[in-house]
Amino acid sequence: MAKQSDEAFFWVLFSAGGVVAALLIPVQLFLFFVAIPLGWIQPPSYDHLMALVRLPLTRLYLFVLCSFSLFHWAHRFRYTLYDGLRVKHLNEIIFTLCYGGAVAGTVVAAYLLWTIA
Amino acid sequence: MTTESNTRPVHYSEFHPRWYRRPVSVYWWIGQRQYLKFILRELSSVFVATFVVETLFQLNALKGGPQAYAEFQKTLASPLIIALNLLCLLFVLFHTITWFNLAPSAMPIRLGGQRVPTFLVAAPSYVMWAVISAAVYWFVISWSQT
Image (cartoon, rainbow over all chains, first blue to last red; front, side, top):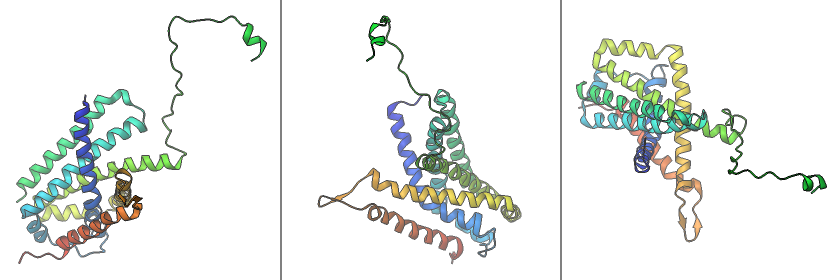
């Protein structure tokens, strides 16, 4: 189980992810998953998006966005389950599932961004 | 004190009694606005994760070629997915606002003995948010490689 020092490490990941999520997700979510599907904005072409994703900086940006946000989720969701559902006795399973999920998502993001172009 | 309690024989137990703790209900966060707000704020993380999963699917579709991406976009336009994403957007905005407003409480700044008002400490975050959002918008919509 997490020791005190590990807890600090996870908390730093949590707050870094919180900042990244707060600053970057709303605009991207609004553009790609709300405004464009609803036809409010002319969608960028496939070639345009691919050109954008080919830039190393974009890929770094997307990697940081995905990974940090997931570690933010892992920490917060873990405590939501502990406190909200009062299931502290399931501590270790929840810990493994949350951080396992974040690590898995990070690996998938790294793989996709590495192989996409 | 009644005479009855004074005359009742006293029992001493050898061991320390267990502390009495009022059991807390699983639904402790319903009913009080502050508690509900807390739980909703914490639950926003689920929608943060949902967004990441969607983005990974989007990258996978981009990787699959123009055909795969067109199909992905068709899926995004279905009413159910749009409803889900609107809900996501609400929660993510809630996360952004509560996150920015929390910083001044976590790090109270004092100037000349006076505590700087919360909205002034949070203001730079909102400015940064606007600038970054505009930049992302520009890159997605208007940027061209040439």
